[in-house]
Image (cartoon, rainbow, N blue to C red; front, side):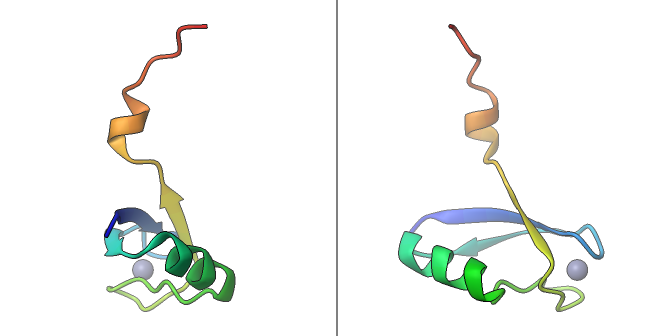
Length: 58
Ligand SMILES: [Zn+2]
């Protein structure tokens, strides 16, 4: 199952969640992804560092 990285927009804590792709879309839409620290649901999806490293060649 893929791991997704999020950052809480309320307290700034980064955290990761293991979700299937379908679950992730469903939970994001329903605001069910919750910060483990403050229980806030105002979270930002972070781009995985792996992708951030890929330079653009075009
Ligand atoms: Zn938080």
